Image (cartoon, rainbow, N blue to C red):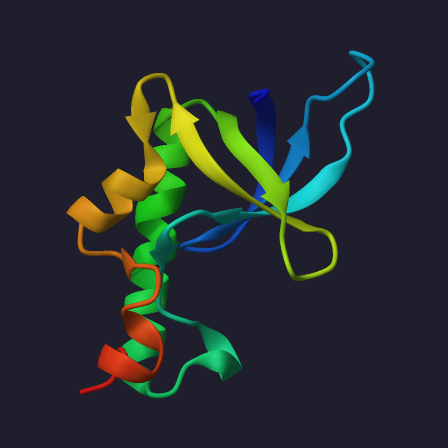
Length: 124
């Protein structure tokens, strides 16, 4: 499977980013939403189910943003696949030998996918 590099344009939330992905011709970098594989972070704004979730979402976004900034804004996408939402792909996100998913989980900024919705939630 091919790995792709991408330049981060925006950080939507803790687990979703807008990236210009480096594909075929060197001067063509289509922009896609990239969903971090395997991690679910709290929802922000109107999607948050309570004020605590919104606060946790802001923290997760800050943690992702700092990690991406320290990586220089260019990431490697591995195991890229189409997502269920229009214009979004799912990928393992790396900078060098470091996984963003592992970083988010280690910082407590997200949970393994499948454990949050309907089970644990983010609200107390």
